[in-house]
Length: 267
Ligand SMILES: C[S@@+](CC[C@H](N)C(=O)[O-])C[C@H]1O[C@@H](n2cnc3c(N)ncnc32)[C@H](O)[C@@H]1O
Image: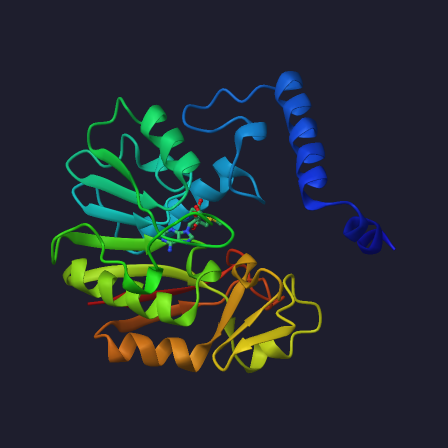
C-alpha cells in the first residue's frame, strides 16, 4: 500500500519533501562538525554521514592505513570517507575524484585549508549521477601516473557502474597502485548465499546482463550487483590478488559488517 502510494508521487516531489524535512531538522539541531554537510545539503543518501565515515576509517586502519600514505578515493562524493583522515594523514596525501560536480565543489570549498587533500571533477557519464557527462567510464584513464598510490578505495561506486566500466576502472586501479599497494572496494556480490537470502535489504530482482543484476530496470545504475565469480575472475585477470572478502549485511543477516560486501586486494 505504502509503496503503491510512493509510486504515485513523482521522485522530484518526494525529494523536495525530504529536503524540506531535512532543512527543518537542520534548523532544530544544527550540525557543527567540520566537513559534515547540513542534512539538507547531503548529496549521499542513506545512513549517518559522520558515523559511516568513522566506521570506514576504522576499516582502513585495520587494513594498514598509515599517516604517510598516498591515498586515492575513487568516486569520493562529498568527502564522507576523506573527513576522518584530516589530521591523520600528517605526511601523506589524499586525492579524490568524482563525476558529481556538486560533490567536488563542496569538497573543494570545505577542504581548502588542507593542502594535502585534493579533489578533481571528471566528466564521465552516469545516468544517475552525471547525465551530461561526455566520457564513457569504460574509456576513462585516471589522471595520475603509474604506481603513485599506496591505497586506493571505492565505497559504493562499483555498485552504480556496469561491467565494462568496472573492468576499465579496476585496470586503472592496478596501474596507479604501487607494487604491494592495496585496493579496498565495496560491491554487492551475487553468490549462493546472497541469491537465496530471504529478506535482503536490497532486492536485485532484475537481470541486467549475464554478470549483473539491478534493483531498478528503468535506471539500472541506481544499484547493481555482480556475480562473485565474475568479480574474482576480473581481479585475477588484472593482476590483483584478493586478500579477503568481507560480506555485508545487505543479504547476509548474520553479518556484523557494514551494509555492502568488501573485497581487499593487493597488487
Ligand atoms: C553512493 S555515492 C558514494 C560516494 C562516496 N564514495 C561515499 O561513500 O560517500 C556514489 C558516488 O559514485 C560516484 N560515481 C558514479 N560513477 C562514477 C564514475 N564512473 N567515476 C567516479 N565516480 C563515480 C557518484 O557521483 C557518487 O558520488
